[in-house]
Length: 468
Image 1 (cartoon, rainbow, N blue to C red):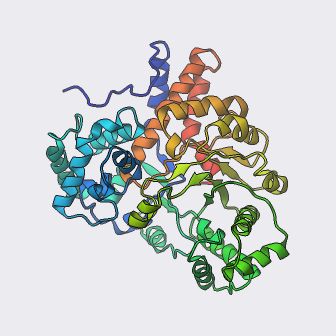
Image 2: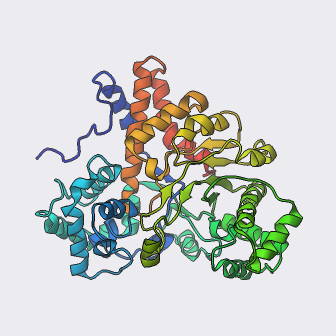
Image 3: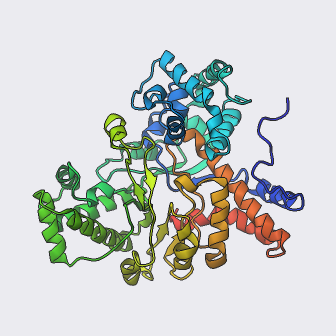
């Protein structure tokens, strides 16, 4: 039978350009994967336990998959969201729901990833349908029972060299330590410091979080100075365990400063439950500026993933919790928002700031110009709703004219779906090679230059931007 996945998928359709893209892609296709930002749990690799079932691996925990099925009328309960572990009959029903509604993924990157995972990892070829559901489920379940399909074996098969996780500041990083101390483990799995909820007073439970932060750091956080020291201490702990970056995702990227006395006053009010919403927002913006100061001191790269309305549908949040597919992008402004931060630290030696956005208009209007001047700023790759073929192409066109290739971050997969990592990186490599081939065809680059850039986008750029 012919191969299920076309070898030239996503490469330019122009017959004069495609051969160049093919040659570039062949040079980078099998290079190791550097994944500097993602959400795979390090315990998956530390424990190396077999995956449970096809649905729990490929459907239920992946909000890219479940959100569009939900939009098509499939209840999240029917997809096993929030119900793990699933029994075998439950898992089989979840898989059938995916197959019955496979057509809703036509034209989406989710279909590209899933088809690549199913075909290249599990040997499941052909379209998913209600009629083929059980056969496909059985094929994947059979593979998952094989030791060659355990997490560590797949990690090696995927060719991952570095994998960054996303971790709470109070995490003891035991899984990372276990991997680092395991003589049989040679790859790098590094933590990322993610302090968002500790920087935003107001939500219920914040005072408890701050108290836990102090206990973990061994610092009294009853006052603002102790709170700052506790954050600094935990950042140092993460750096000592291999972290190279600190990640931040707030409703906006503003960095307006407060005086120390005003910050301390709001902190006291917040601990007492008396801070207003405006004060809480002002404190969070000030603390983002403080995070930049700390990055200058401890060397952690500062990455911003702003402008998302988390948990847009409150009933779904109450029923299923966070990260279940109902986060929605917001408009973002960077130029004035980041000016206080960049005035202070934009040219500071060793400081690095990677800017991501879900607002495409910001790429050419703000992010590329910032990355094209400040030596500290890198234009982050298309993320989340934008890590899709046409959006990635638009990103390259929007950013390259102003910031070139060297000021971009390299691809980030930003995924919890472990098996989708190679498919996502492969998609990015194909698209970048297609873009470079067009520049060659237009005589804007020589092919040897394009080849050099293609390799650097996969290897040098993420190493430099994330200090890998």
